[in-house]
Image 1 (tube, rainbow, N blue to C red):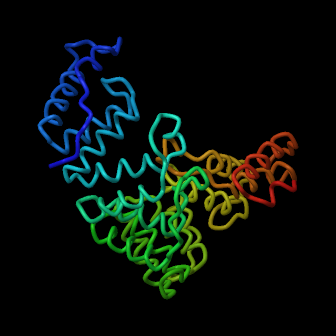
Image 2 (cartoon, rainbow, N blue to C red):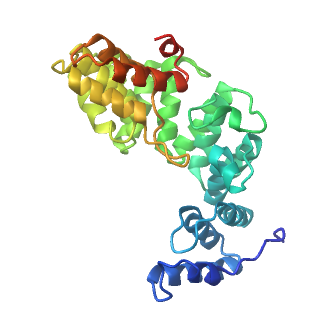
Length: 320
């Protein structure tokens, strides 16, 4: 039998949202999900948890979302485990009354990975790498870095259809971290991910064509790949910015480079999802404005970018 679960009167929550009419289809769907969740429908609990997390047709309530994800996970829904694990890694979760704990997150990701959620393998691999999805000292508990285990988890995720896991595994093979260096296999993994419209795979495939690692160097093809990936992966914007600043594979264009570095510096990370900011891009943008390289010199803008890079942990910027 599942553990005791705190019962909520979801219809009351729905009706408490001023902008939502009782006749609204979204409100009716939420009521239906509530009834199905009470009947131990794991997917319904997870879907209702998403609505509570996002504030869609019920009041936004992260504690409620966490409880619903926990119920879904307990009832065997791997995606519910993964979503709860992601909340356990968000610094902002503690402000909403949700426990933040990396060890708990690792356990939840493993449950998801062992079940039906390939992303659980991806996020577990990220924890073992010490990846960019982990907000450092905001977490309780420690997961020791283990690149061999990270590679194993990425491999599982890749085989199960998590294309970002393929791209992450490709990075490890390209760098020889946790696995034997194999540039050709790295390219194959990035190509597989890119073919499946995973922007991270396209970004790293583009970088391989810049450097001629595992494939013949082809800067023009690299620029095409990075351009396509830039909207979703900030490291692609950074790489493309370098090409424009140096005139590699494209005509040199300082303004375009500065815009790309600015975009990568901002990132798209929201509520633990999206592409994080790239600290070195902030530094590169600052350097362009500080020296007037391809852009009008602007020491105020340069200082702003250097401060941002410093806050993101890029040490060289702190001395500028």
